[in-house]
Length: 339
Image (cartoon, rainbow, N blue to C red):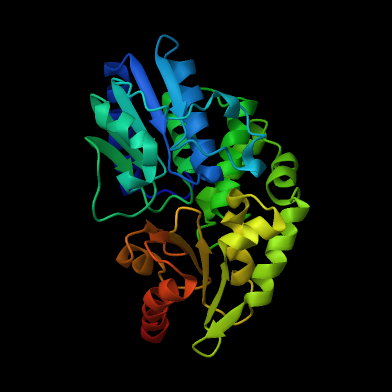
């Protein structure tokens, strides 16, 4: 397969065989991804559910959101998104729980109770981790998106990828590669994109919804973030922040803030970007991006989060943006100085 080494193919064979055996042992299957879901999380989760239904029509498959928060506005167009269930406090006990696109169990949020009640847990992910969870799993950090792995699993199973699944997986790959602009946009990512377009994915439609349908309230919020951008370490670190009161003042939805870090990332000369955001729960969420070889996942992991070398995140129990900055910035300064 293009972009995959022979050794990776052997690992993939073992991983896909393990997932298949777990599915075949189960009658009831729950699938979940991380809180504050992005295009890769939702696209991969929903696509995998459809692939399982088509390969094993007798299985009961339920896709869960991590918590009761609504699906982000720009992703509500995705096929099958109305089939996602919220964890309702009643703990079901599926035979199998498949965790998709997450390396830290805590990011399942309220859906974690469903995972813990399951007889068996399989993790399908592309994030590097030092503390894996679940009974079994297949993790391939070299994959640009979990959506690439789900596409390869469909091909491995021999399940045809139809238009709905193709659109789900194209959204997964496009968003996790930052419109094919991030460092992880490798030959395998472009192979996957080509396969999905050939299967019926509509890149222009997906781009329209994800990147070209911003609400006026979001644009006002974006202007605040742009006006606050500052730099450190002779311009190598770019940062900005969002206060909870900014959401109240502009009327922007909380889920619309996920892409704001890419505005900060655009600063010329910056090697890493940081966006800090207050939440109504009294926490500070941080998004990190790298434009070169620096590995921001090391900083995120040191703060209890995770992610990739070029894109990572964390959540801090901090009262103010200043307090969070005092914890994060020394780590970023150390990273760029070492780099």
